[in-house]
Image (spheres, helix red, strand yellow):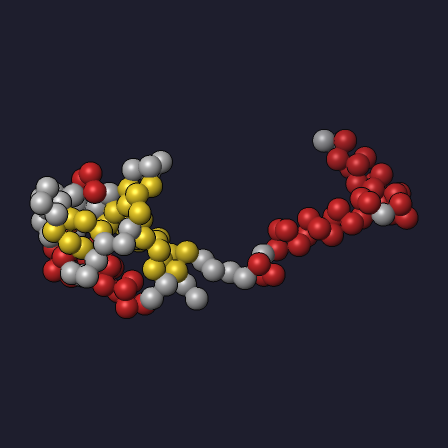
Amino acid sequence: MKKYKVIYDREICIGAFSCSAAAPEFWIYNEDGKADFHGSTYNAQTRKWELLLDNEQDFDDNQAAAEACPVFAIKIEVIDETPEEDAEEPHDYGDYKAHVDDPEKESENKTMKLGHDEH
Ligand code: SF4
C-alpha cells in the first residue's frame, strides 16, 4: 500500500486559501493570515510541516490543495512501501558474509582479496 507525505512550507504561504477551498478538513484559516495544516507535525530540521497519509481520498484532497496553491507551498512525496524481503542489497550482503566466515571457502576468499588488491 502506498503512503504519502504531505509537506507544507508555512513560511512561504501568502494566505490565498485556495487550499482550504480544495480540502477544507485539512487546510484551515489562521488569524495570522496563513493556513494551518490540520494534523501535521513540525519538522525543526526542514522547518516545514508534515503529515503522513495512507488514504487515497485524503491524498486526492491534498493533491488538489497542492495544485491550487499559487506559491507551491504544499508538496507531496510518494513513499514506497516495498516489503523487506524484496530488498536486494541486505540479502546479497548476508550471503557474502557467510562466505567470508566459512573456513572451507578460504581459497575463494583469497582470490576475492587478490582481485581487490590489484586495483
Ligand atoms: S493556497 Fe498556498 S498560499 Fe494559499 S493559503 Fe493555502 S498554502 Fe497558503
